[in-house]
Amino acid sequence: MTEALKHIVGSRVLQDEPLSKHTNFRIGGPAKWLVEVRTVDELKSVIALANEHQVPFVVFGGGSNTLASDKGYDGIVIKIAMRTYEIHGTTVVAQAGVLSSALARATANAGLSGLTWAISLPGTVGGAVRGNAGCFGGEMKDRLVSIVVLRGGKVDKVAKVDLVFGYRESKLKHTNDIVLSATFELEQGDTQELKAELDDKLMKRKSSQPLDAGSAGCLFKNYEIQDESELQRLFQKLDIPHEMMSARRLSAGWLIDQLDLKGTQIGQAKISDKHGNFVVNLGGATADHVVQLIALIKTRVRNGLGIQLEEEVAYLGFN
Image 1 (cartoon, rainbow, N blue to C red):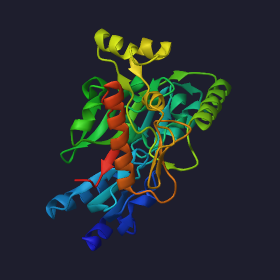
Image 2: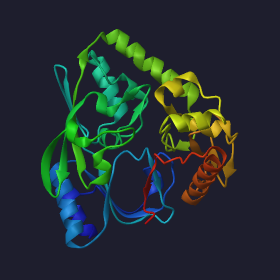
Image 3: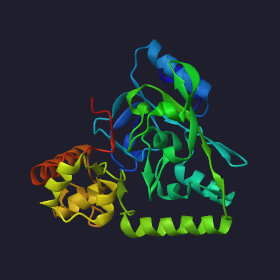
Image 4: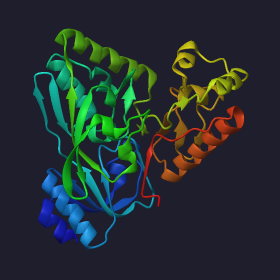
């Protein structure tokens, strides 16, 4: 298998590669094979080879929102390294492996408005589209026109309307489609103003998030209030800020903070003192430490507030 993979991608195949080297959490055991693909043909060939030999595979982007198992992954981890983008007027086409932050900077430098919020978004365009990632009031769906996917070995174009976007949600999360590229329609803006927006958002991120330790970013989705009766129930327990009440969405970090869980630690995994929705790796954390901490948080929030938090982080190699 190793030789067959080398025939497809050359030296861009690693055997028994620690996933801790490829995730922002800096956690994860060895992948039996880690393969970097730079073209659609390479991706097709690796998947065809895996299917032929009945070897499991998983597609992996930037590793920003992933918790990899301590035992690793007994199969092929395919890392998408297609990282080019094109700007034509106000239309932007980015391959799946482009860093979201790099696209935000490139479009701002080109005087295009609509993606500056993504400067603080870790990970790649493909993963961000799949999960409808967002921050600072923006989401990937806002400016998206269409995507190109690999579906059953064939390349297909999918319109935005067919992706059924929701909060940190899309139809892609429930299919085997692999995002290859995304097309955005932006607006003309003032380059200097846009660059100032980038700097402002980066400063806000630096002041509010722990950037000095391994982390998968926001661990949980913010909680969407279901109806008026639930809102009234929560009013009995919480002093809900006006902006959260208006949005009908409670910040997961804020909820965790209300239960005084910041600083809670299991092994070398710790709930950040800076932001309640971040769990950080203090240097020797294992996936098991993080999983235990996730369970503790969910139990405390459920028992204390009657709210079931849902993870935003993706699990790799836990099955």
